[in-house]
Each structure stands twice: as structure tokens, then as C-alpha cells.
Length: 433
Image 1 (cartoon, rainbow, N blue to C red):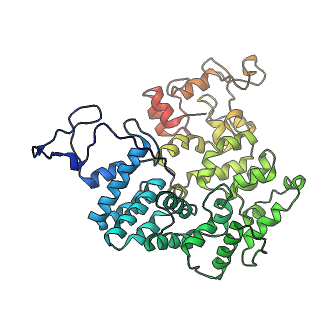
Image 2 (image 1 turned 30 degrees about the vertical axis):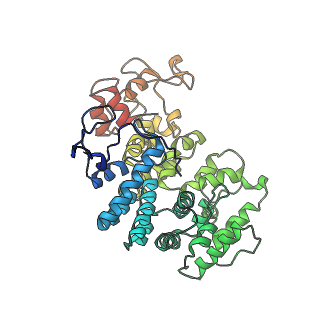
Image 3 (image 1 turned 90 degrees about the horizontal axis):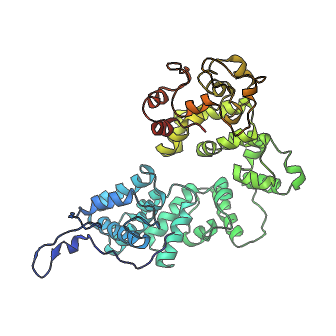
């Protein structure tokens, strides 16, 4: 996961260096810029580092190896000094701060330190840090690369508990790929998880067969894997005709798997077939692809309804910044709403709402540059190239209405307030693409 080198910092702000051993007096603490600084308490320093730590990434003042080493040292110290606080901190780091790599490294390094110190309870910390089906393999890969094949019992059992909780047929199809050095079968083989029922036991045995390339028949208790195998056996020429959402859902198809399986461009029929099976973030990142393919208005309405659903938003755990940047686009997913939001002068036009195709590239109805007039398909000014944008569109994107005080009712109050400030604020809160 992380790359390490041995380059040291010029100024080490460690608590052990705070006192001059010879003179037994406080030592001057300097920042990386050479200014006077101070030493934080270990838990405070761990918290600030953990919430900003993208494991294995260089920062302005610290290299990746040095930053990762400092993080490991802080984790080991705090995990031994205050195990109760550490047991609460790691689950919050994964589910509250939504940081995957930092929480996995913290759980494993803390468990290693607690095992060496004889402190119990690290099994539950490791289990709580793994919340996605590919993370048991990630944790095992980190440990094997960093500490070798000797797995302490708490680490082994914590990863096994997470595998029992997270492994199912769909996760096997999505995450158990040849490109990963540690497969589901490796996790099962090294941690020995106890299956919760007979069906999961068959799944574990099938994962081992996949890992060792054994051609054993699929168990009857795994219908999703059987449906995927049936689809994979279809000739390439017949795959474009499979557009039934129920068939794709039964086979555990994701939009990435469907695009590779079809071996062809994803058209509107393909997107409409896979949209009911897509997750929140997958819908959010494919809005432009939906527009380019020209999906129907009904599919656009379904996407918009899911993206506006507060329950879906909370369950998706999409960070606040990406969601706020894309929420105006998500709100324009329906044909009528998109057409009315083309520009302030086009708002409320029933004809534009009924004739404009869904998507941002087909909704630039107004090509006029004179306030109070609306572009027409017969006027010379409306015949523009697809890359050209009308003046009213540019003004609306910059946060300025074409005619003062004529914001349509469909424009949210957040965009109206930002339009009265600066262009940068408008782009941050209501950027239109």
C-alpha cells in the first residue's frame, strides 16, 4: 500500500527531543519553516495526522515514508497508552471521517503494538476498521508486505470476522479479480474464517477453487455466480440484446462489468438496463455518460429521484465536497427540470420542456444575446456549433441572470445567493457543465 524511503526530516518535533539532555532545559522547538513551534500531546497529534493522512502520499513538508513512519509510531504509542480511546478512534476514523487506508493501517499497527504489550481487545478494532469487501484483502496485503507471514491471533481473527461479515456472491464477483495480489481465497486460506451458514461455506470453497484455478462445478447454492457464468458463455454478437434489468441484477452485473462484457459502446439501452442496479456514487459519476448516451426521460427522473433522496445520500457516504459540487447537475436529471433551467429566459417554456432532449448538451435552447428575446431554431443566431454557448448561458454559468431579478423558481436559493457574490463562489456551489 505504501512506499517507504529513509529520508529524515531536518527538524524532528518529537516529544523526546523537547528537552536538552545535557543542559536539562527546554529545547527550542522549530517548525519546518524555522519559526518557533510547540509539541502537541500524542493523541492530538495522532488525530490531526490521521484525518489528513493519505497513506503513501508525499506532502509539502514530509515525504511519504517519513509521514507513514510517524503515523505508525503515534498509533503504537497511543494504542498502548490509552486502549479505550484508541478502540473508539479507529471505528470513527473509518465510518465518521470515511478514511479507508488510514483506518486500516491504524488498526493493524495498533493491534501489533497491543499484542506486544499484552493488551487485549485488538480483534474488535481490526474488524471494525474493515467495512468494504475488498478491505480484508487490503489489510492482509499490508501486513504481509510490512510484517511478513506471521499473523498474530487478534489480527487473524479480526480479518476473519470481517470476511464472514462482508463476503457474499456479489462482492466476490466485484472484488475478487486477477489484478489483486491477495484474493478472497488467500484471505480464507490464511485466516480460516468460520462460515455463518452452509451457503457461505460453499462460497469460501469456491473462492479457494478460483484462487487455485480448479475447474470444480459451481454449487447449487450460489445462483448469482451461476447466472454470471451463463451470461459469460453467450457469444459476443448476442450480448447487445441482453437489456433486461432483472437478468443483469440476478447476475450481479456492475456498470464496469457490463461495459467490458458487451465489448461495445454503452448505448442508452445498456445504461437504462443497468441504472436500477447502480449505487449512488456510480450514478453520480456517470451523469455525463447518461447524457451522452441519450437515456430516456423516465430513466433521468429515476436517477434524479435517487440522487435527491436523503436516505440514499446518507447511506452512500459520499463526501460533502463532491456531492455539493455535483448536486446542481443531479438536480437537472429530469427533462422538464433540465429544460426550464437552461437559462433564465428559457424558464417556464412548455414547448422547450417538451421538445428538449434530456441532458446538458441538448438543453441550450436560447441562442439569443438580446435581453427579452428567445432563440428560435429558425433564427440564424440559434444555428451554433455544439461547442459554442449563447451569451445568456455564459452569464447564467457565471452567476449573473440575463435580466436582473428574473431567476426562475427552479433555481435553488443557494445558487441565487452565490450569484450575488463572486464568480468563484457560484462555480463552487452551482457549477453547470
